[in-house]
Length: 151
Image 1 (cartoon, rainbow, N blue to C red):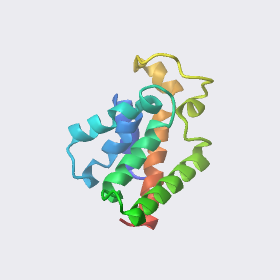
Image 2: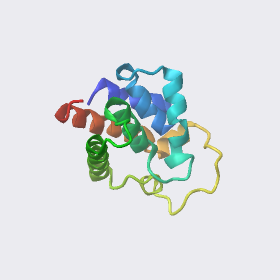
Image 3: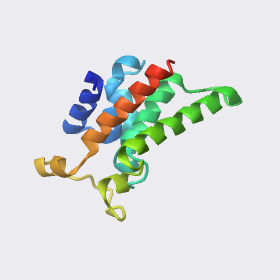
């Protein structure tokens, strides 16, 4: 769809985790340097540190939205409500396209692998992991949402 979504897939295939790939695809729109963005998203790969919970691409999508249009005043319930509405709409669209927002379900796992050690990135790894494509879809979902709901 877009250069940005293709970039997210490329970033994943270059070794970034799924969450970093989505966040870094929006680097040009965010007021943070690449190192800071990569470090911010680093814990969310593998469904949060390989726990296989919420997909890292979804977490990355939420981080980007928050940096673009999040709230920061604790008692600002109007913006907090708008923010949570956006998160739920983004999650629903990602789930509609992929069947889930949960990492282990997207990977077809019954349970997490039980290790915090990341898988080696080999040609075989990339063949069986949908994560690059999921990063691409997460970027597309966010871009479409932002087009309909400019910040």
